[in-house]
Image (cartoon, rainbow, N blue to C red; front, top):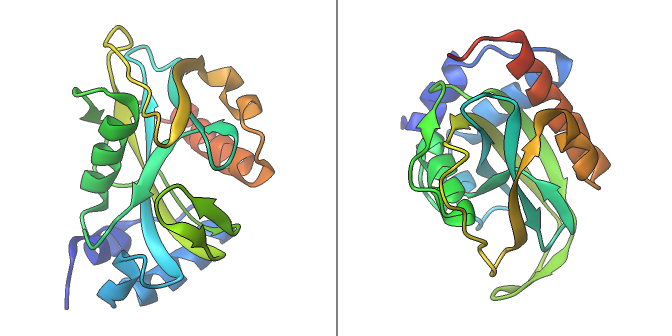
Length: 189
């Protein structure tokens, strides 16, 4: 069996011990489509890190579940094209219709634990793991934004140098620092 996720993972070049370890585990789980769904407590997700055209601001949302500012993203729900999932989630969570992927490969990948919580429609959600791939996008800062009131309490362009401190989740700050460092090291224009 082959899917787009397996191709992405095969071509991904890990940076550091964390990504090398996480990538090896993700490659094993990507062979079984059950991990593209929430039927497994270990499942793939895709996130969008959206920059403005000057690449000095990040589009953030205020997550209701985590009570924190962060990037956009969501579950694959059976879809193996995680770039597509990240693009779809960014549109749904921000209201933006025009988003440009700055590269087709992820800028980051990591495995993260999600604490048990109550979801507005699904009720109790057990502790589980997100096998997350983050993709980098660009959008026009002047385009109208929309708050997705089902999932968020806000959406805003945040100066890149302030984005990490807006997050109240220590485990996410590490990820945001990693992504921002990579953006600053590379040229995407």
